[in-house]
Length: 467
Ligand code: ATP
Ligand code: MG
Image (cartoon, rainbow, N blue to C red; front, side, top):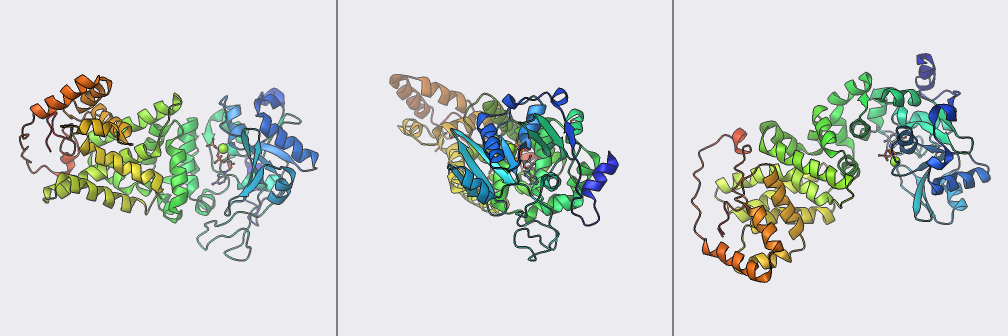
């Protein structure tokens, strides 16, 4: 087995030697053509009808073998993107770095990729497959055959090809065996494969979390010391990866693994360093946010990346805001300045589209505003487009152990109350309006300032309205 793998992936030229795959019969794999979606089956049939090869590949085959429900079905073929496009009326070629075709079948969208080949060209000698001197792959559009395509995939368990017509699986890299062993192994030489696409570091963590797989030793050993390669990945691509990492229903486990493999600092540097100081409140806060996110996804509730980003960056925003307040800035200005500074530094790593960064900042802003409920303000706040997220954020802070003097409960009651009770509630907030006693800051060290449950100085310090 080892010899066979060596032949495939360590050939002298660095390219893939032709190799017969292991053909896995239905009696062994247990799948049937009905396991795959109608749209994907149609796509395979049309391609084969036109004389091309076509297979289901990647995550869908892996997930079916694990008894999971695949979230989408990808097809790999020897037809070029242009040839695919000619065969399907409702199709579109997308991507530059990696050109693929989106084929629409009814309400389904099937992604069709052309078999890729290795290319040794150092920058420029081949315009369709360009590597930098450091081995980073800038474009990956050199086409090849199925065996070559297998060796271009990231992990062995992602390199299985299912052929629905004869109901067999073609296994070029022992992926079937690794699925049984629940083992995640990078294909080829880890050094080369991670260098040519450092996002694979994150994909390793994502699959380990999602599939509950063990990372194979060589793959694992490579990851921890090489997180710095992620600095070469464009921030926009990291944003896409961030969504996959945190919105797939395994955010907590993924986050823990990112920390374990020392990758978090390359995605959220300020969060990472804050957590190094703080083993208490902020860790509970972020973990709770991730638990809630996972729960919402599993129960098919809507999640917004803005809320998650607001939570992940809150420790940095809050600590900076406290520092600015200590230097004499008024709370509202301190919070706004901190929000702007933390966001500006964060986008150097992960691009934050405005449609998410704007609501993220509004959620932070509401943390102060929700404490100001007197007069008619509480009613006005209910109309705020981000009220629900801001309120959920208050609940999250309390859930993580922060003492906001019952602010979350007040708002829960207020939303359920009839107009008469609402106006009473607003009045009693006003009635109890006293200047809250200023808490003397006791020159706490930075280490302790973020922990503990008394995270009350950004949010209102009590149920009294202290504006
Ligand atoms: P998911 O369930 O998250 O969609 P997936 O394995 O289908 O998992 P995709 O990102 O949809 O992941 O990619 C589909 C397939 O394309 C993968 O299974 C893998 O074979 C290949 N692939 C994707 N990204 C890379 C990469 N960066 N390097 C090499 N191969 C990749
Ligand atoms: Mg997929």
